[in-house]
Image (tube, rainbow, N blue to C red; front, side, top):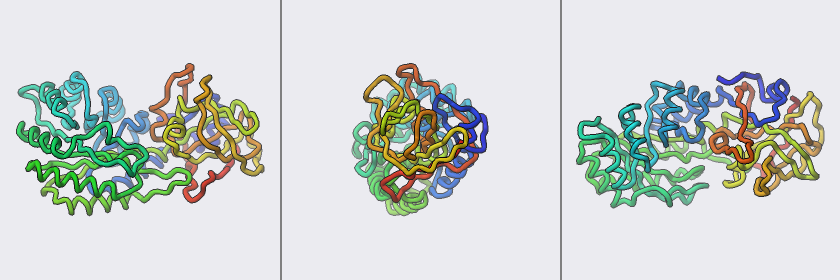
Amino acid sequence: MAEFFPSAAAMAAALQPDMPVFCLRPHVLEATAKAFCAAFPGDVLYAAKCNDDPAVLGVLAGTGLAGFDVASLAELRRVRAAAPRAACWFMHPVKRPAEIRAAIHDHGVRAFALDHEDELAKIVEAAGPTGPDLTLVVRLAVSGRHALLDFGTKFGAEPAEAAALLQAVAARGWQAGLTFHVGSQCPEPQAWRAAIGLAGRTARAAGVPLALLDVGGGFPVAYDGVAVPEPAVFGDAIRVAAGEAGLPEGCRLVAEPGRALVAGSCSLVVRVELRRGDALYLNDGVYGSLHDLKHHGVRPPMRLLRPGGSACESAPAPFRLYGPTCDGCDALPGLVWLPGDIGRGDWIEIGQMGAYARVLRTDFNGLAECGTVAVADAPPLPETMSDEPAAAAIAA
């Protein structure tokens, strides 16, 4: 586990960091994962692509998850290092043959996703004529119109093609399943209900006993100005839809949440390196941890951490934020509200940064360095009913 502090402010006071620092809250991560598992009517896998920090993987391994969804051999190895006994499912629909062979024969993976006959051929060849029994999960194309990011244009077989793949899997004597993904950050439970209905019709058309239905990920989290339903709302909708879809007896439900498990468990502390009028230049940006803010338009909560314990009494004011690189594109959209006297040397704590922020960092301009600590305080919370983020300030 990373170095531990009672709060993000205490970390800033003690370390005076000049690099971005992720503040992991293990207590939040554990509680969130257990709550999701309790709300979902089936098995829960964590999508490791979202945040593969060893500390995160280690905490999640002890929360009752059924296993981990991995998308590459490297990701599989990271999970195995942090949680050696955890079950891993290789759910990327397109894989290199060498990855499939190593996953089966070196790491004991027995579940794979696919959405094309050529991918099935790769898995058959890698398994070999005397290979182990596998579970192959066919990725079904579904609508992503309710989501922030629609994955349907890249992955997924149309129903007739998916039915043929199910039949080919069953013909080999392997267990067959269906999966889909309604898109990332999807706030509409009806999206899962519609996709489950399509999956039920596809399974009936195939005439194949369905071992499992994996409803994917995409479960949303709150950001500033965005409220989302609780996990139980999605769990209830999925339970009802599964009953209506006429799935065969014994067909188990599986989910692959990522963002919904880890987003709120981690904040990011960045430092103001320069103030020019209403512009703040930070030591992290869109080529680092703030990719989602630029490209997907999310608005995480922010609060000021002031060095030296000095009080902040100024009124909130709107600011533009810029990252540390020499690229003019390293700018965040819109305005953020922070105390009006913020300046060089102050830190800003950005909440809801446990999802994708760490894994999408690049080394552009040689600025990849960042730290990770564990903290025990409450994270910054989104102002879901307001169009303007709260300009909170905490003395460090």
